[in-house]
Length: 128
Image (cartoon, rainbow, N blue to C red; front, side):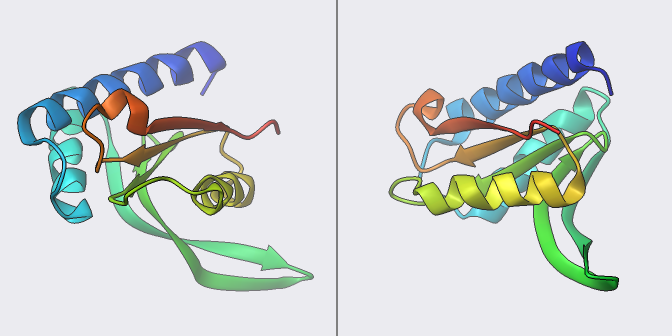
């Protein structure tokens, strides 16, 4: 996916995050937000895969089901959902590693447990 289309997909995804959070607020389980976000994205015509198990390759070895991404949108945008008091550096590192291993360029790290959702959204970029 070219950069312009990826940015548009990210913007639409963030719009959906705002819509879900506006309706539900903070305090629910991660799975509830993920299901509602999936619904919003699919309503807009996007392909959404949830709990995607992906392999890693290491020194000639392929390890199936090595990690699980929360959401993969149109095979191009990774979304990692959290419900935590605050995002820690390790959360951003996790998304960065997922992007590197999957050879994707952009991920969104969403902490749903914030009063203002704009404060809970982080972009993570993989400069391939």
